[in-house]
Image (cartoon, rainbow, N blue to C red):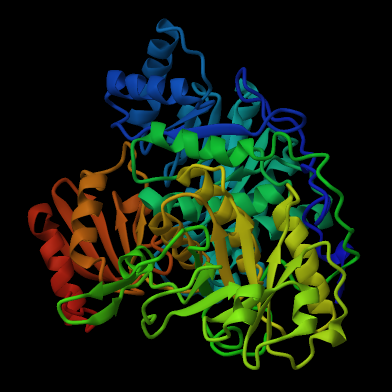
Length: 638
């Protein structure tokens, strides 16, 4: 057990309280302090297309975007930011602009004289990434820091002169060779990469700074932000505002869920002062998702009280799955299970199970299970007139089970369980406020179904998980959340946050979502959350950057083509990157990469190794498939 002081990263683990940060001036929309959590996005039009960028910016602003970020890969684009800014003002828009810089200090220095904020990436502002390992002594490492300082201080001085804010934005996949050589591809390396630049800023008495720790893996991203806050406190640095985002989240349901898992987990703990949801879609479509995330916390303060936590049973900066014993196929080394809820249906026929991944083929009289095949089905008081397929088991209400014990496994209250129990498997419904006596459950075939009605649901459930951990309880736990009155878009965001945050900390052996919505959508959401948290991989994963002014091809169309051909390759991660800036580094842990390398040219990767250069765009998807086959990762789609 660790004291909270040594592992602190938020105000409270049980009471919602937003972390107090210093105010940062960004034009007429300040950030941090008492200001609302700000919403932002990034243009996808070529920065040299002034009118196109302006019109897209206006669509973003009217959707609710408070900061507009625009790529400036060279001095040419940086200078054109002035034309964009003037045209926006001519049309009556005075939103702060943010220049996005990679590799080019002189472009950053030019942009800092024009826009309200500049974003730099420590991994490629003064360093380079050639995937080389170099042994550094303390002396040679310090010399490298001094070299960075010489390149970075001119930008600081310009920002001070023009009142420009600066975001020091670390990306997991683009850590420099220097950082990788000392710290590895880790959250600690991400944090140190940013702190090197932050210390230089503080030494120069420049404090108009925002920080970010973005990754395509929500688990890595959450650990890095937590560690960053802890390290700033330990070193006595100022409480700088945080920009939250999961980079290259993807498109559609997957992108929304993945973003909500990472961003929502941190918002739950009161971290974050601005949010950007990165989707492979038009930027104005990112805004409603960001708003859904942020709006959940506008009235969160003053929720029903939750007992405080005095000791922390896990290290919040690394992943350790909670240990549980196996009961039937739940807990132990099993993947987390998905419980599909059909308890409110009046009757259930075979065809209904297609909605939860189990299709009945009447002509062959057999069942087929797809990648979203639920593990258990809650029937409530229902009875079935057909046999369930192999791989699917039933849960029924306790009284229904008492009347006919062949219907399935019982869902009981604590008191009901004490009167009668199944020999092999019992689901016992626990409210997070219930008082549990650990010895009552030792060696009994009980899976807890943990629920709460507290508005601060994740923290309430986490409180009981901490207690179970402290008592060394090894009973598996299913996380139950009820979202009856929500749209599917809101359910995706809420469930990805409430359940995903617990899974990221290693808690939970299954998901059970209640909703009046389409059963297929809810079932898909459960599997999407497990995929995003890396707890159960059932789909091909696509790491695709949001297109921007650097993108060298139609990213949405290309992603759709690649997905159509490869979405049956369960567990394979494919990165689709619009340009070399989001190239091999940003792909992080992808198995294959498809990266824009120039007009009509694609580079293909296996891991971080270049396999083919200069592939013509029209042939590139076919060549990617050929590469996957050559490397032995292809399976035929039956």
